[in-house]
Image (cartoon, rainbow, N blue to C red; front, side, top):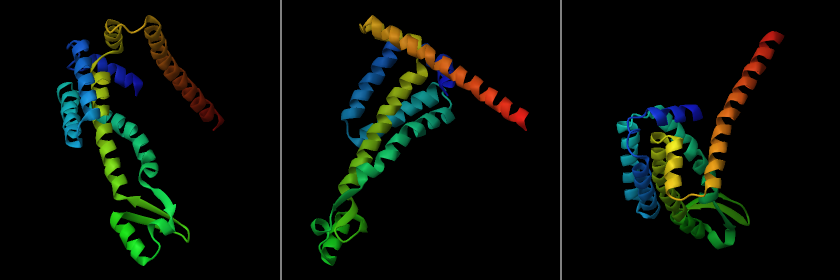
Length: 198
């Protein structure tokens, strides 16, 4: 996927726009997405998806794959965000207490001393975080998929990023492709050995 991202960043329709302005726009929208209301965050997400997929002609399949893989981390963290554990006496001492807890959320499991439940406030918080994640990811994808890495380095250099940091970024970027090539060669060798054994 990394090679595909690199190829798309060089061949998209917004490639000729100045990288400094693209990064500036994405940085301002990222700040706005972090601070704004969820409806504004969804508007930023939709607008940047339109620019990235619609105008830059980035394949929707690649964009969806990147979005799903990024949101997978959020999905895996949902149990920690949503589920709360309390003593049964504090949430549901009786049947009336169970009813009150169910109105404030959903009781999942209730034992003699402990209860697992999902409060409505946690669901609202998870939704708010999800819209923020979508908007921030759209900003980062806009930069990543429409601007080649050397141009991003030029923007960072213009912003007075220390030279040692830029050199480390270049080394890491080169080693990503070396790692991918080595992993591919190892996979081919492993398949060849298996086919010889059969």
